[in-house]
Image: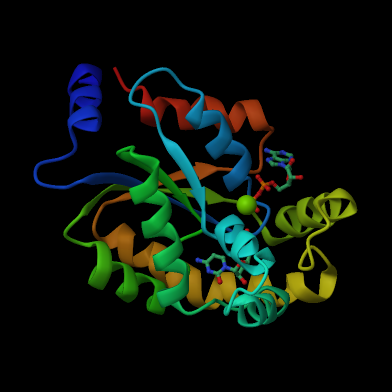
Length: 207
Ligand code: ADP
Ligand code: C5P
Ligand code: MG
C-alpha cells in the first residue's frame, strides 16, 4: 500500500497535475508546526504552503495592491476574498515545479471552497483533509504565547476572539462538508508535538 501511495504521489493522480492535502484546525492548533515536520518525511515529498504566510508575504510587498485589504482581514480575523488567496496558492504551486502540496489554512470558508473548486478542481486532486482538533482554550494560549515573539498583528486577545469566531462559524462547516465525503483525517492536537506527529506520520507512511 505504501508503494502504491508513493507511486501515486510521484506520478500525480490520474489526469491531475497536483496532489493536495488540506490542513485545517483552529488558530494555534499546530498546523504549521506539523506541516514542517511532514515535509521532512522520507517518501513522496510535500511542499508546505501556508495560505496565511502567503497572504502576510503579499501584504509586505512594496506597492502590493492588496496590502491594505489583507491587513484589515488579518487583524479582524476575517477571511480574505478567495481570488487573492487562490491566485497566491496557484502561483506558488506552479512555480515550485513540484506535485505534492500541504495547503495549510485553506479552504477556510465557503468563498474559499467555491473559489478553489472553480479554479483548481480539474488540476488538483484532494487526497484528504488533515484536521487538527484542539480546544479553544489551548488554541488561544498557544497563540498568545506565540505572540510574544511572532510579531504577528493578530496574535493578541482581541484579534483571537474574532479568529476563533471565524473558525467556528465559517471553517467548521467546511470540515463538515469534507467529513461527509469521507475525506477528513482527524487528529487530537492537544498533545505534545511529538505525540501528535506520531499519528500524523501514520497517515503519510501507511504500510
Ligand atoms: P497554527 O499554524 O495552527 O496556527 P503553529 O504551528 O504556528 O499553529 O503553533 C502555534 C504555537 O503553538 C507555536 O508557538 C508552536 O510552537 C506551538 N505549538 C505547536 N504545536 C504544539 C503542541 N503540540 N504543543 C504545544 N505547543 C505547540
Ligand atoms: O492560518 P493563519 O493563522 O496564518 O492565518 C492568519 C490569517 O490570515 C487569518 O486569520 C485570516 O485573516 C487570513 N487568512 C485568510 N484566508 C485563508 C487563510 C488565512 O484570509 N485561507
Ligand atoms: Mg500557521
